[in-house]
Amino acid sequence: MRNSASGPGLTVRAAAPRDLDALAALHSGARARYFRGRLPDALLDTPAERARSRETWQQALACPETTVLCAERSGAPVGVAAYRPGKDVPPGGVELSQLHVDPAHWRTGVGSALHDACVSAWHTAGHATARLQVYWHNRRARDFYARHGWRPDEGRRPAPDDTHIGLALTLAPGAR
Image (cartoon, one colour):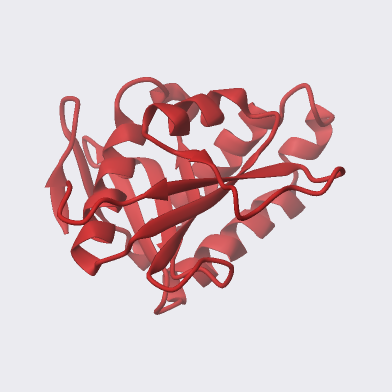
């Protein structure tokens, strides 16, 4: 898969093992940005956090059930998305487990290009529903998903002390 995406020099392609370090760094940077003010800065960029991020992406790239997409601009990774059949998703559904954009590329179409590539692949695979979890305090991400048609997941009510909310996207048959 190699799709032209929005913006100059932006493409979305299947991620490869050679992307591991760049994807882990991108994820850590995006995570630090949306947690800033919620966690002490000293916890956001530690060797342990970087190692955890790298391990997460190493596992995702190695898992045959997980699809990892990389958005790149001028040859450099600027966004990443991962999805898989979800264990808490009804039959025919898929779970968007990760979607991160390098903060320097926020609001440049990278997230939308990754999202569109995911939705296109889900339609091709015949999925009827997509689900995801998003941190409740991450208003920017929640607004992004709302603009792309995601709605609160009525089948997954958060616990009172939960840090995430569930969102669902109904995938119309034949739509792209």
